Image (cartoon, rainbow, N blue to C red; front, side, top):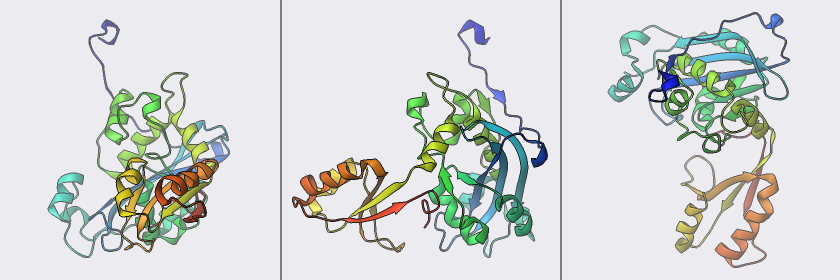
Length: 283
C-alpha cells in the first residue's frame, strides 16, 4: 500500500523493552515526564497522574535504551472536573485511594542528567510541587526547543508529531505519551535525517536571556506581540510586563530593538535574567 503512493500506513507504537541501567552502553540519563492534572494552574490544581520513562543517551544526542518507567495515579483533594475526565479518561473511581509512590519516582529522577517534558513550562511547576527531587534538575522542553517546522512537521502537538512519524498510540495517558514522545525524538527526520533529540540536547545546553520590557508604551503592545513577546500580569511573581526569551548571543540585537523601536532611548536598560536549563520553565 505504501509503495503505491496512494496510502500512508500508521503503525501502532510498541514501547521499547526495559533493560538494566548497567547494561546500557550510553553514559547519560534523561527522563521523559508527563503529568495529568485537575486544571492548568499549578498553584491551585493538582496532579492526578504522572508518567516517567528513563532512557540513556550519548553526548551527541543519540538515544540509547529505556532503563526504567514509572506510572502512578493520585486521588486529588476534590472531585476531578468533568472536562478533565473527558480529556484524559481518568475518573474519580480510578484514582480513589491512589497515591503516587514518591520514593520510587525519586529513584528514577535523582540520577538523571536531564528532565524532558512536552511543554515543560506546564509540567515543571507541578512536578516540583510533587517532589523536591525535580527542583535542582536541568529541564528541556520538546515543544519550544525543537524547530519542528524546519524538520518538516506541520505542528508541535504530540498527536501531530506521532502521526507524521508514521505511528499511532493511545494518547492522553501520561506514560503512553512519554513512550510516544521518545519514539518521535529518536527517529531521524527531515532533510539530512536530523534526530530531534540531538537538537533538543543542544538547545538545552545554551544559555537564554529573559527580557522584560517594563513600562513599554501601551501603543507598542502589538509590535511586541508580533515579535514574540508574551504578557505577564504579575500574578506569578514576575514583573507586570511584556517579556521574551532569546539565546544569549541574540541579546544585543534584542536590546537594540527595544532601545530603538520601543523606548526610543539609547540608555534604556530593561530588566534581564540569564537562564540555564536548571532555571528555565520554573513557575
